[in-house]
Length: 288
Image 1 (cartoon, rainbow, N blue to C red):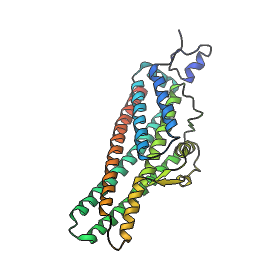
Image 2: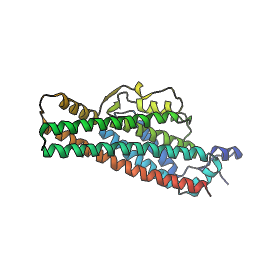
Image 3: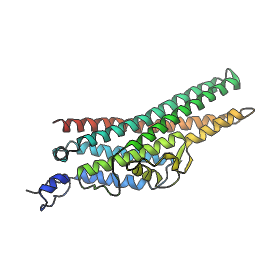
Image 4: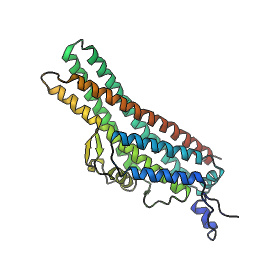
């Protein structure tokens, strides 16, 4: 009898003279999604690309969830014996996803409050300036929370690298899934804070290094403006202007960013639900 296509390294060790049969189509599908996401990290980090990457993550994790339904997967996880690390990895993903969701929600609420004041204009420019000041203060809170979330990635102790980890065994595949997911979430968090990586592969390299070393900081990345940064700058300009100008342009910026946040929120909510399902499936497998 041939070895299972999802056999882990420990299982192969017992049958070293046997070759694995053809991998299950879902296993191959997951690797295809991983390869596409890795390639996407070598392109730009615009809002449209980030939405595209979130869509790719959704496809990847949907595939992983389906993979967890296979009896072969359940057997492979049981044989590999890396329960703690797999569970810690799933928790890391949930934590970073939650940080991104919270940052978007907080920014969206501030945008809506500012829009409401701008529409009414009952107190004139004074009231608008007060609300803008509140918005900018709230953004500082968001940026501080994002910095903390990114710093927490330094605490990851896994020695997992996308270029070296074996994707031909199940645990190696799951490690790669974690790396590419963390990398995309990290990129999104930077974007929300108002800075996005200028180097084509800097986001990818950052997470790879964070997974291996505690010496790398996010400040080492060169950056360019995102839509969040553009709005921050426009509001700062209003605070120091003698009179408000181009209010329509500012309102358009607020509407555009609110729409962008809505898109990101939908993608992250899908991801959060999927990550919960995968963690529950993992717990069920490891507890039986």
